[in-house]
Image (cartoon, rainbow, N blue to C red; front, top):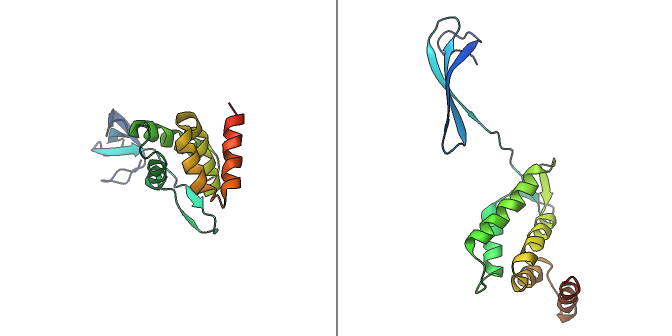
Length: 151
């Protein structure tokens, strides 16, 4: 770390402590040349996740958009906001842990449906009907049959 006073490139860490609920680490350093002290902060570098939409356009992943879709699917259902937040945390973790920085909206939808299937089947069918854009009762019944056969 370069000293802000003399630009010497070596320093020693005097003190280290977590800040911002463990999101950052504050380090007090001392320059090995001029002995002046300065503070640095260390944070985890987060790379944005880019979502490739059905029309091939791209946008940055927005967990609020996913939450809104799930909230609509779970409307008037016994699914807590905490359950949905945990579900989105799991989905986001899967996405972050993949080596790809781009993911298709289809993959995100599939991850959401897999989670919803375990939480509430009615919400799952609602989400799937919008996500998969059911055109008629036949495709809707086909999805219901798959759900019933998986039990």
